[in-house]
Image 1 (cartoon, protein in one colour):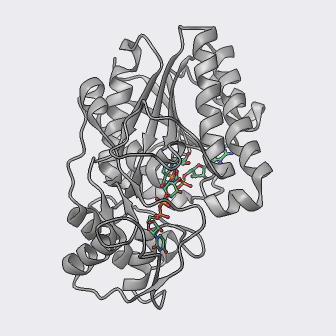
Image 2: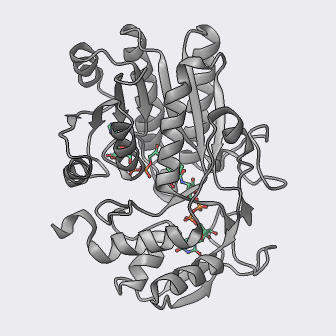
Length: 341
Ligand code: NAD
Ligand code: WQD
C-alpha cells in the first residue's frame, strides 16, 4: 500500500514539513501543494536535504480550482493530507471572512476537485480548539464542541462539512485529527516553527525571549484554577504529531467510518512548568512578567489520547524537556528562522 501518491496541502509549513520527512521515509510519494502565504521554499529545500531526495512542489492555492485541477490531472492522487489553512486566532477575529474563505471555502473546493478525480481519502488538521472550554479534563473525542473565534469555528465547520460529505457517500475515507499544542522541531535543528512577526504562541515566544529578540515573556494570568495559577496545556512534539499522520495514512483505507482522533500526550503543563523546563534544559534565562489574562483563554486543556492508541497504535513519546531542547536547537541555529540563510 506504500508507494502511493500523497498530496500534502500546506506541506511547506511547520507541521507539514515535519510530516513530509516521515512520509518520504515511510515510502510514500509526496506532492507538496502550498501557496507559501505562511511559509517559504527554504523549508522544502531543507527537507530535501534531510531526506536526500528532491520533492515535487506545486505552488498553488486551495481556493483556486485550476491550481488543484492541474495537480489532479498530472498525478493520480491516492490521499490528501490537508494542512493548508490560516491559524492565527487574533487575526481571525479581525478578519473573519479571510479565515472562512481560506479555510472553509478552500476545503470545499479541495473536496470537490478530489471527488471529480475519484480521490476520496483525506486527513484533516483539526484542533483541540474545537472543544471550547471543556467542563472536565482529560478531553476525549466524545466531548461536546464549540468555538469562540472564527479560526476555531472554521475548524468546526470543516469537521461538520466533512461529516456530511462522508454521510452522503460512505466510500469517502476521512480522518479528523484534533491536535493539541504542537511545539518542538526536527532534531537536526534545520527545520522548525518560523512565525512571522510577534509570535502568538507560547513556545516560540519563549525561545525568542531566550535568544534576546524579545525582552520578556508576558504570562497571561496567574489566577487560573491550576496548580500554579497559569494556564495548563497539552504540549506535543511536532515529530510525534507527524508520526500520528503516517499511522493514520497507513490505516486510512481500512477504516469503515469517519474517524475523529485526538493527537495529544495526555499530560498537562502550566506556562510556568514550560518556562522552568526550558530554562533547565537550555541553561538560558527566560525573563517574564505576569500580566492580565488573554481574552478567550481557558484554564486547562489536555487530551485523553487513548483512542489514538487504540485505532492508530500511536502514542506520543517525547518529553517536555526534549520539546524544549529541540526548539532551542532550531532557534539558536536559526535566530531569524528561514531568513537566516
Ligand atoms: P503553518 O502556517 O506553518 O502551515 C500552513 C501552511 O498552509 C503554510 O505553508 C501556508 O503557506 C499554507 N496555506 C495556507 N493557506 C493556503 C491556501 N489557501 N492554499 C495553499 N496553501 C495554503 O501552520 P501549521 O502550524 O503547520 O498548521 C498546519 C495545520 O494544522 C493548519 O490547518 C492549522 O490550523 C492546524 N493546527 C495547527 C496547530 C498549531 O498550533 N500549529 C494546532 C492545531 C491545528
Ligand atoms: C498556551 C498557554 C496562554 C503566549 C492556540 C490556539 C489553538 C491551537 C494552538 C491551532 C496559554 C499562555 C501564551 C504568551 C502566555 N492552534 N501564553 N504568553 O492558546 O492553547 O492554543 O494554539 O489550532 O487553536 O488557540 O496556545 O501557545 O497561544 O498558549 O502566557 O505570550 O500559554 O495564555 O495558557 P493556546 P498558546
